[in-house]
Image 1 (tube, rainbow, N blue to C red):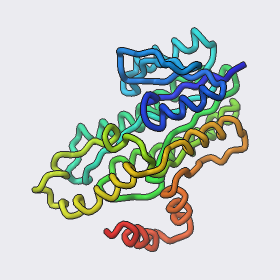
Image 2 (image 1 turned 90 degrees about the horizontal axis):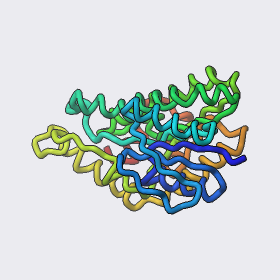
Image 3 (image 1 turned 30 degrees about the vertical axis):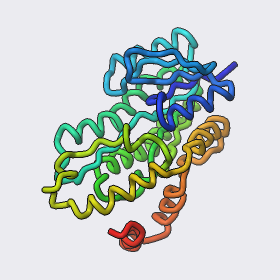
Image 4 (image 1 turned 135 degrees about the vertical axis):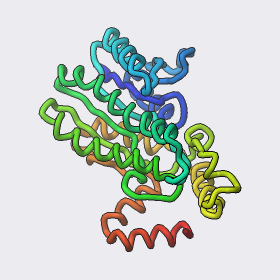
Length: 271
């Protein structure tokens, strides 16, 4: 019997590619989208479903629809997320809340809604799309970093709670890939990006580096492949670094002292 997969934020970027990859490998995929006017997928085994992780009723309705039709959810992939580009000083209350509402609170609410069904079946896999920035800091991304640090903490704690029910929890610590993240996945604070910002020199130096790495980055297919491997391999590592930045910096973070690692980051990015 085919496994049923629910993916949030699945109609663009790495979420869409993951949905397509799993569907082509025989999984029944429900692809979450925030668009209320839902177009049918032209790929077999994919059903687009309205799902906004900031709206509790949307979460409950999506899960209920899948359970009514399929009777189960075998895999939850928490992929919905975005990045706030802002200094810590200039980020507004609304921007701070929205960053965590999607990246953290939405992930928690989504997981909370699916867990009772997985516990009932005594089976399940939860995969949270995190980032190498859940293990290290970079300037202008402190809010995003904090949200991804929180995701890593959730993974590490939730694993203990659900292991007795044969539910596995993992994270993908993604590097920078060639997606539409710069256009659709980044929200910039107006003060930080203005000519009057006291941080304008840092912004003018650092933002083009990140934008170039994403715009000219490789295909995110390795993300989709790693997700498939986690689902199919019960002995998968807890957290999987995927991409050049993740595979470079995460091991370094473990090897070096805090001060030595910070100096390495400064040297690498010229900051």
